Image (cartoon, rainbow, N blue to C red; front, side, top):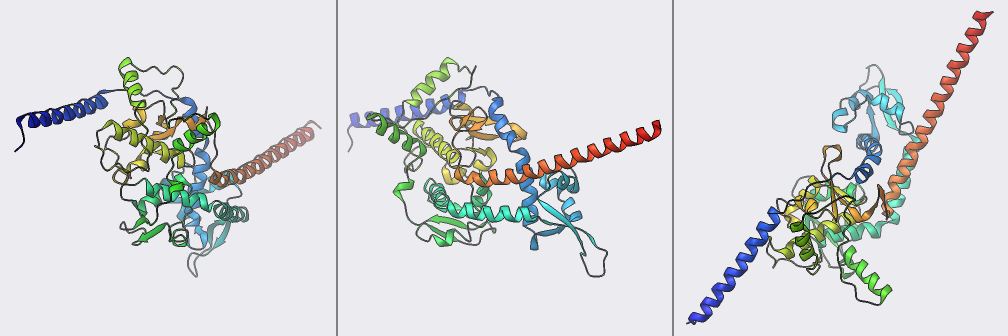
Length: 393
């Protein structure tokens, strides 16, 4: 039999624990942070708008058999590609991507305009393969980290396909890269059918350190003083927090850092420690991404794997000194503040060489087009001057 004193003590502890949990849950949900626009970080997204549009059209053509498609067929996909101008206008604006030629869709039909990739684009695609090859260890580590942070060390293969561009994975990483690393990965099912999963086979301790932990270790090495892992808080100019929110953040920052690779199955979903861990996971995910930003709807696909709450997006406004929630283009995008200086990325992911090379290809085409337009205008001007001279005579 339990003594009356023990029962009372146990009940009091239970009441206190649940009361504290209730107060904490209520305090989180009641803490409101007004969203404030950050023009420079919004501009960072705007920089890549034209490149991404071109990449969408290129992807559409590359996915076709033989990498060719009738012009009128591609024209019908403008809405899907979010293309505001006609395809032929787009091609004129962006030379070096495609060539136009005539062919028959069926035998005995009239030839129509077809689109195929240009020699310049083919050369870029070869360079892209080489960049992926040189950075394969980085890609493997990123993929391992995504699995190591997940609840059961397994993630839907179809969800990973959705984020391949955010993290810089090759298009064929599930069928080419994954089978070559059986010591790390096991793929079950067939990707594309909704029941395929990528599972972590072996845990690599070298991959189990977050960006924040590595930063603390480096600072400790340089200073000779043990530095505690912590988040960098970088509030934008003019951003003011209410006293209640400042006190809450101060107390929350004093909590021990919870690594995103740590087992947190024992933590309550509404606990302060779980909030700390969730922020750590978001920080690590954004750090692993190419542009240190990911659209919120894409992050939302991983609520189950990473134990995000249904209201996880409020984390980005509640911790405005760590993250920024951009609304540019009508899409909520979570951005890592510390990764940017103004509207420019500070540390460039090695895989962004692909984007830089693609940008060079586009810019070279734009320069050629501008030069052709200039010469054309000069010719028109010369012709008009010649006509004016003849009339005067």
